Length: 330
Image 1 (cartoon, helix red, strand yellow):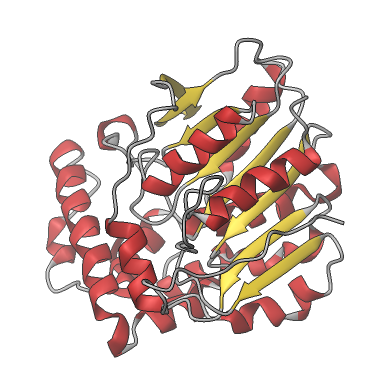
Image 2 (cartoon, rainbow, N blue to C red):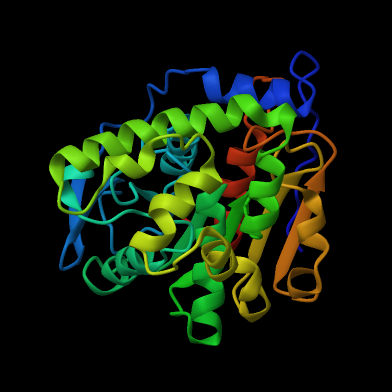
């Protein structure tokens, strides 16, 4: 049984909103993390993605962590770098995937990423196994990346390659409709505006690069994630409407098929990932999935007081310990 370290929230940053904003806004130096290799992968005929990779000297001997970021994040998000720093020190190779268009890669793909696009992480998983000879892999994702992580494991089901040893999802949006409903609460207006500021800017860049695909007239008056998904994400990815997109892209429909050890970390006070979804029979009834709901922690934050052995980012430490449990480095 995995020995989960106890989470004690930081006294200074208690509360779902305060902790979420603090974790998002804070930058931190990570001098122990080497400069990564920029690796490009042609995952489809019209899609190229960038991953930042820190390979151990013998990549066919060391286990690896494949990391997936959240909505409008990138391989340079603080949590992606924080996990990479800890995993590298523990002996893992680390591959941080930028989803399509993220991390300044709008020019590499005609299409858009979305919450259910497991094609690209599956491509990297297969590449790491078949081309790099990586013997053991753990996949971890935050928020939207957490939904992708769980969906990938569920879609693979009993056919998951033996090299996939475990997965971990932090604050995953496994029921997208429920999470978008929560995002639209008045108390979450700042998060909504932040997401939309980034999405609108990205769409303007995409329209400049691919004017035959992206019509900026649809962007007029769109100031919610649901509105953006109705105007762009859903129709351009074959879902038609946001309602259908949220239904079909949610990992909730396949979590019952997960057959590798899966750990979910989420907080009861997450502003827009309601804990109710994790009590659904699809996830609660799967013995391969362990759900940990902490009282505090916010969204993808889980900040604690640092000490001599701990930098105060509890979830990052748990991910690496979970990975070591299932893919030992020594």
